[in-house]
Length: 277
Length: 209
Figure 1 (cartoon, rainbow over the protein chains, first blue to last red):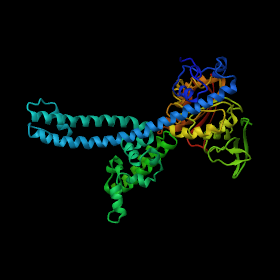
Figure 2: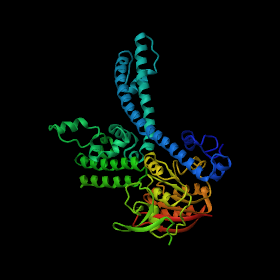
Figure 3: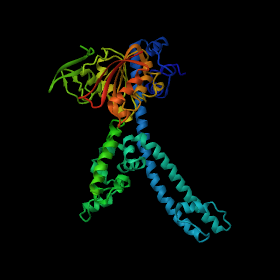
Figure 4: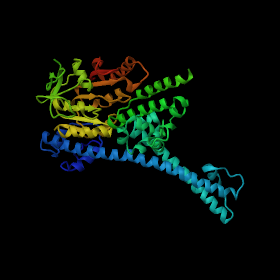
């Protein structure tokens, strides 16, 4: 199988079937495929071979592009939204569960970790059975959140390599989700990227009774929250600018641009140097 | 003259420029059916503009690695014969497909140039040329892995991007290392820095050894 051309086991006149072989097939080494195809009777001559090849490669590649694009950024959007839901749900269920468990057992700690500790106990009464079971649910939600986070961390660099390099995979995914898609994020001005996730504050500002927000979800980036408050606005603006460029490169060209990180690092060093002076 | 047949220097607004004849692909200026090929937007265009003897000829069969959205490939397909265009990122391939629709012997492939076994069942052996412009670490590895597609007297015409290998190292050192590795499978025929068209890029012409 691995020594055959794309035309060997398919209907070369059916672009969909032939396109599938172009996408999924393999060979250990190339060969003089046009001559092999004519010998095998798959094409009458070289000209017809190239005509069939073009139809197969265009059809197969078009299908592959659609699948990869659909697969990629929308799956990431679902995952990072699920991560947030799971966080909220795990914390809410854990809060109730450990409060209940605390009335039945000694030394119950708060939060999802507290619930996980209770889940390991042997219940002796009907009430304990319910409280321990509820703690188990909270722990399960926390575990699922971690598995979804692992998925996001693996997927984001494939969908948006430069954005993930600068923002980290989880923040990259949150920005894509807030924008709706990588396409939408790539089309946004960087001033909008800067305040993504701060919509409440932004509209309060636009209604005229609040200062303009300096940052949205990019606050979670070390370069924003780790910068002295007086320079945080500048840091957020500089970071948003680089993230916008990264999103555009990821969407429109797909190149790897490691120099973006150096440029961002240099810019941040200058901004942070200001407040130590 | 080292320009391949089908590539001509012709007058455009702002002076003479390289051009090829074919369907317009990306909003480039067209005069009398000749499409301007901007050396600032194309590494292969710059390589020709710098006067390197690429060995490329009209009607050549070509494997183009790192086709991106098809800007340069569209010109290659205008003067070359069968042209296989490999690109890894889905978004630019959407534009590449439009370029391919308008050209009879351009074959677009959404594949990873580091994994030739995933397209060796499609791309033929004995090609006249490989044009390589991949912005990834391991550019010499890519050239060596794809050498199997070239005829014994075929040409590799590559644009080596220093920053893709190492952003901190001096470009000269990066180029030396990439060339050393390339010599494991190729004889290097000519090299030239691509300034002022492209910073920190080296044009390389080589043939299998």
